[in-house]
Length: 286
Image 1 (tube, helix red, strand yellow):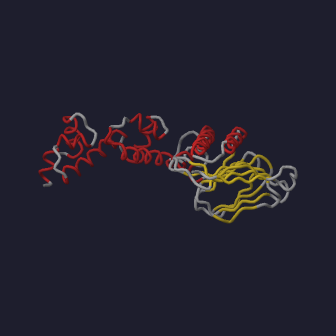
Image 2 (cartoon, helix red, strand yellow; image 1 turned 180 degrees about the horizontal axis):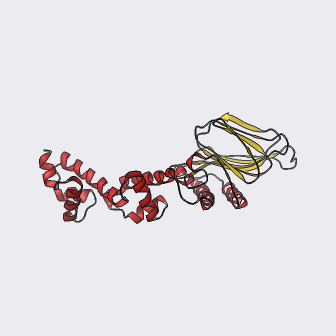
Image 3 (cartoon, one colour; image 1 turned 60 degrees about the horizontal axis):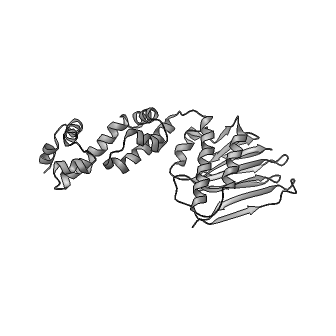
């Protein structure tokens, strides 16, 4: 069961600020999961840190001013700026003594978190970016907060709104950068390793990763110096070699086990990659 804690502050005294926040006490196991969200008008000088988080945390400033201290640098931020704190990176942020900031935030994690962020203005280790259409992003963060609740369905809804918010950040940042290519290639490789035996198509791999087939091809060429289809074939043949060495399965059974329905095609692919036939490979290593 997903437990929820919420804090709400009154909005009557704007000089002292207000805070509306949500925190999931129990974290759902999803590829993208919201840990916390909310919005706050800070009191003058209000600060957090220095400290570290165990998740990603994005703030978007809608008004006022403040500072972010991160990795030996100090950023002075204002309306339209967003900043990211990464897991285990020491940080401190503070509202200005006069004209303190108001911001919206979301904290999140999951295996897809880094992949999505690599396609935003936070790629390449950047911690601050300015948003030209920031109000759309603000509204998307508010939707995450409004979807809060206990239970797995609420966790899924919040994850959906979070993905939409990250999509807005991606729109402002065309896919590029070596970090993004590497992350998508590794995610695709992981999916292949988990599913090679059932014969996934490259379109399915690209869809699972969340990119086009052509972008997936670029990512694999950059990270592994081969195409996704060749990576899949090599993954299958590597497993076939293990079975030929350590099992008594027939060559046909080995082909079936690694996802080849056509045994002749399996033999041709095996010879292309290893230089010998499956039968010769087994004989040489027996």
